[in-house]
Length: 547
Ligand code: C2O
Ligand code: CU
Image 1 (cartoon, rainbow, N blue to C red):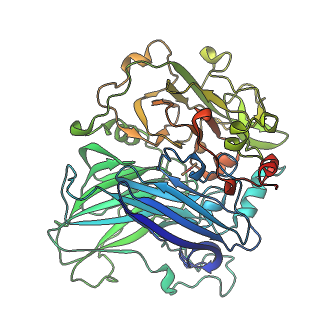
Image 2: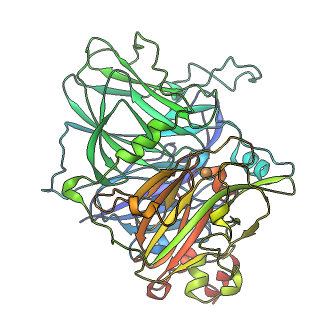
Image 3: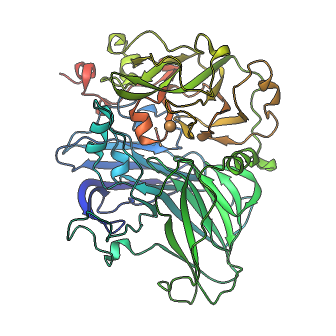
């Protein structure tokens, strides 16, 4: 195993990823940032210099479990203090499992300003994957807003509440296309011929098979991804091999990664569209387009066809079916414990307080503490956050009507957390429900830090505590770190609380987490090693760095 050392400088720069000039956060001048390429077992060292001038930062390594290094998880308020302007922070951790992962800002709503990238961990030399391909490529799908993160965050926190709305465009590997002749665009801000927004080109050699690693880091959008005229075989999800299955379009939610195999087996005399389309919310966002370029056709030659229009935004069935199709590859089954020690049912509701809108989990809208939990729990600074834990299930869950708006909009905001007994097996049932508006329930991709979980099942409607667990897949469930809960449905997960630390669990929609859609789990805090002082300095953690 090697040590891979990166020096990154994080800065604001004007970029035009969709032809519209916007202040974006870059790493070493780029957004998406540099890819981390490593081999299983390698140690990654990133010296991150914050050159944002007037803004803090923190970066999370999404999908890396941080076994033994919970302080390197990069979650502001949970595992570290933010990195101050001018400071350099060292992240050091081991990538212990091959697969496709991501990284992104985890401070405020900074991720959507462009601070993100991909992590590709290869198998050690001599070990083979259970599938073969000729070339390996990575792309990240994203959505893109023209308003600044600050304007968005301020709107979400104000009275009256200002929703962020739909993104202006969809990006494929950092490139999209906004219509510069849209009304109200100031002169000089949008330039359709700027090479920064020329579409991403994936050049393929006829007859060859490509492993395409696809990650989504959208702020809001659920996506359908397809390559015109080509099937895709899904082989990996969140770093785990899946029993291969073929799709025409892949549904992908923020925080998920997949590998698909695509063979360039179509008419090689032309190029094809690569399409990313927003689903699950009624929207008019134009699809993101890239070019699937058959060598030796010219990469800028437009495909002769109209891009495929993709599935209907409100067709839930194929999305649920894809979720159900994802099983562990038969050669790589990690069987889950057959029973659990604790069941936590998390009811996802939208609530209103004094004219502002929040998301709540079991009637608790989550807020981050000012002193990172990791420090306060390790050093017994328990006064720094609310000590009343959120409930494992709400009173009256049995009779709660998920098909109608919440009957009672009352809830509390709290920075309390769940404390899990070390090494116990925990089941989480995510229960979706109707939002404040009638006939509306959206998809939420939930991401767990520090763990992979088994996906035991998905269901329609209200989870039945006595019957539904009988339908769990305990034989070959996939392990993932991010999973959708579909509209009006439930999703059940299981994990073992065996990674000492404090771990965030939240909806990966940036504005939803900001509006309180999250929770935090602590386990084995007494087994966490000595905390580096570099994660301290804010809130009450200051006391540890004073001489
Ligand atoms: Cu990729 Cu806590 O997020
Ligand atoms: Cu959400």
